[in-house]
Image 1 (cartoon, rainbow, N blue to C red):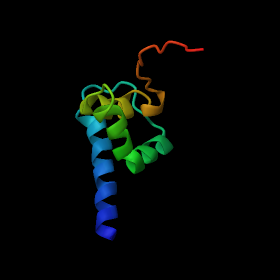
Image 2 (cartoon, one colour):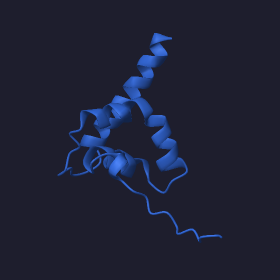
Image 3 (cartoon, one colour):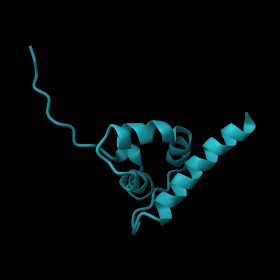
Length: 85
């Protein structure tokens, strides 16, 4: 069980490190430690929400976390829904 949890955390940390160093220039690094910890703990949810069902590529997803202030400040452009009354 410990090995599964360790693997889960290691994958999250690797994704975060790849976001900092392998996705291009990073002039505005995310320095919020809490935001990074939340990313490491919830990376499967973000991967599914932003990449699988969303409109981001995996590289954009990792870059948004590491270099654009975190995923919480990244807003996807959703199509306008008509108001029904």
